[in-house]
Amino acid sequence: MPKKLFIKTYGCQMNVYDSARMADVLAAKGYAACDAPEDADLVLINTCHIREKAADKLYSELGRLNALQRFRRAMGQDLRIAVAGCVAQAEGEEMQRRAPFVDVVVGPQAYHRLGDLIDALEKTNTKSVDTAFPSDSKFDALPAHTSSESSAFLTVQEGCDKFCTFCVVPYTRGAEYSRPLADVQAEAERLVELGAREITLLGQNVNAYHGERADGGRCSFGELVRRLAEIPSLRRIRYTTSHPLDMDADLIRAHAEVPALMPFIHLPVQSGSDRVLAAMNRRHSADDYRRVVDALRTARPDLALSGDFIVGFPGEDDDDFAATLRLVEDVGYANAYSFKYSPRAGTPAAERAQLGDEVKDERLAVLNAALAAQRRRFDEATVGRTIDVLLERPGRMPGQLAGRSPYMQAVHVDGPEDRLGTVAAVTIVSANPNSLTGRLA
Ligand code: SAH
Ligand code: SF4
Ligand code: F3S
Image (tube, rainbow, N blue to C red):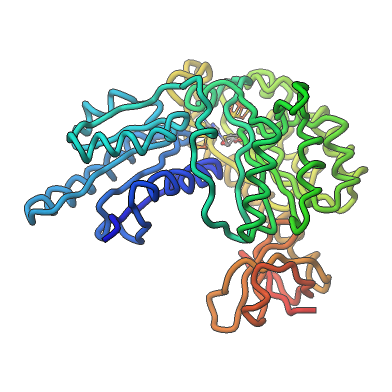
């Protein structure tokens, strides 16, 4: 009988990709996925460190798993517990001290060795912590994909050298690294063979990609997009997350010239105030960002934007916040995210004088209202239009299919299951709070 594996994933899309790859690694060790920790022989938690108290919340979740583990052992069975991702990276050995019942701690750059770590556990009951940044690429050691959804993730770039003063990513994911072009092409082709019609290219700074070409030269992100667009049957290419500084002319041109490149970009700016942007070490001004957005919209007039904002950064005053609201009005977002600044230990901004929670909450509410209104307007503007929808999965109601518009809106339509995995023309009939309803055109 196959052993059962339950994976719980927190954080960004890169963690979603990593979880799928860890499932592939563990499949080779005889583990099949299951839907609940209660059914599992091995529980793997893939963690995120971006939010406040991420570690504390993880330890409480581990406490509950420990109770399940003790119950199992009392019944003469077992439960193994593994922790991966960015909290694993940040905590390392500390996790063995605070949660000694955890069997394996593995960082985001070391999980290709998870198979060996599980072997050591099963054969000699050896627990391990592996949070190294090995010099060999984990991507070379990962097994090939064995299945794919119609919309797939593909990590092409990892890590970050930008060191925004609020962010833990450069510490948990390490230095910037780009996979060679040929590797990315091979993985994309494999995913398409397995049924992917949309691929989202992932990286903490995905448009900083500069992978090696076969001729030894460097391939820019714009060129990567063009090469992948040559794959027959790949209908859609997306990418996330991009940084305004790395949005070069070639990539902007690709938005005009590559039909498969979807007209929707997640382009975080964090603040509309130059003073705050400087304190964040973003290395661009609010007007630099406006210029990038204008250039993108000139290249692709129907382009829609998403973004991330932080309110209550140390030193942010009312004028700074007003500048953020102005930027939001100028850009007009389809769907953006806002966060209350939370100090992360080890980052420079955590050492500065902090704003009170009240002012942060107030600003967050104001910004959220502005972004929600923009989102509603954007969704309502699609009503009556006929747009392409990649039909990805059965909907919640019988006879219903669910998919995504070019702008990442969730769309529900009535239609036959044999349309799944295809791009269909859909006329949007109504906009609901979290999705659109349409009919096949
Ligand atoms: N690489 C991406 C973002 C990675 S983190 C980029 O450069 O834009 C995702 C988002 O979390 C960030 O865009 C930021 O808005 C938010 N974030 C990161 N650290 C934070 C912190 N300490 N407090 C509040 N929000 C934070
Ligand atoms: Fe974090 Fe800034 Fe790097 Fe994005 S660019 S991952 S926000 S340090
Ligand atoms: Fe979180 Fe790590 Fe992604 S901190 S956002 S899982 S890179």
